[in-house]
Amino acid sequence: MTPRIYVHPETEEIAIQRVLFALSEPLRLDMVRILAEQGETDSIDLGPDLPRSTLTHHTRLLRESGVVFVRAEGRKCMIRLRDEDLEERFPGLLHTVLAGYESADDRGEDDE
Figure: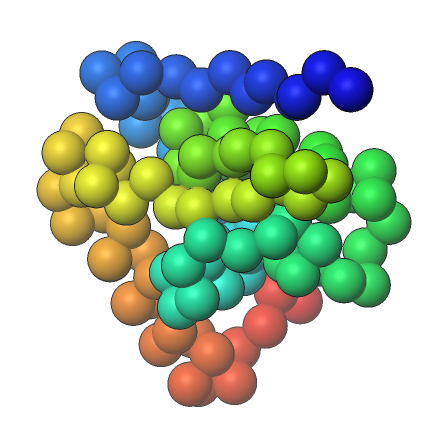
């Protein structure tokens, strides 16, 4: 069985427009929050109730934008935040986005 190989942008190729687009969708933002809290996680644990195709779509978009790093581990698809790369490219961005997301949760806001 050939291992899956995932393509990731180099740190200097990560574009702010793609990162902001990736973080603009509530489901992906929730996935990023989980990764920030738990560290590297099996992709299934980021959306256990989601269809596999939906989960794959969102993790691919996060990977291609440079927000996450994905690696195969046997049958698992392990995902972690590229927080150091994002901090190097856009200092404070991830922290600010996640802090704003948590504040919205505290106020009971949702994406209606």
